[in-house]
Image (cartoon, rainbow, N blue to C red):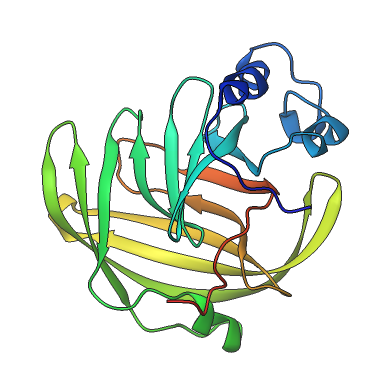
Length: 216
């Protein structure tokens, strides 16, 4: 079953056990077993920041194509078709993301591994240390197929490398995305939006119902 939902009092009760240290019982370091994760009645994703232990975030709200994922300690990650576009409660928050052209990673799925897609541009705002209208350039490259195991289930994916560059900061990084071969949706990603916050790895544990990648 695909789960969606809005924030409710039970959200904190479900999420709270996942952040307790020393209770890593499940697969890949999660605080619960695969069976217990399957029993969560909300869409959910596993999140790691850098090399930290994973936590589970619950889908708290849907606003158009934007999905709001909440943790027990009130951190919120907002994604749009798998892209991280805003954060709340991080050491340095991503306030907004504005695309300078159409942003769709789907065309990359139709290309040959080893080839590059056209460049993608976006403008981001961050705080604290307020930094507004920061241009980000990126180029995307196929890396071929890979089988992921998520909550005990094998999923066939295609992997994309996104090389990002921020001239203003003299900073470069690499983001990666794993697309489900059947649906084209992003099942896993590793994304970094600034040098002060380590790369954020997100894995879909129970998917949300969201617009297909072709939708505008």
